[in-house]
Image (cartoon, rainbow, N blue to C red; front, side, top):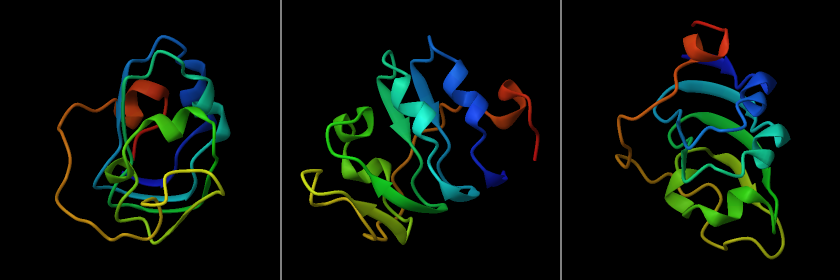
Length: 106
């Protein structure tokens, strides 16, 4: 998959697992995803995402490995200091909600 993560993913309010790792996703992680309070597993590692992971938001409950391999991601003050351009590779699971499920194929 390539392109930006659609804002519409934030409408999947009962989503528990979102794995978009190892793709060619660009841009920022939509802030709408922070409202997915049932999300127990989240992984966007090994893409080309950028922006800040906000302290105190939903994303801070996930390990830094969930964001690894995205050179443009930075941790905000108070967030996990391990977040950022770590360039870790190889950590992922094959449980994904694909772009087709959210109205966009790539």
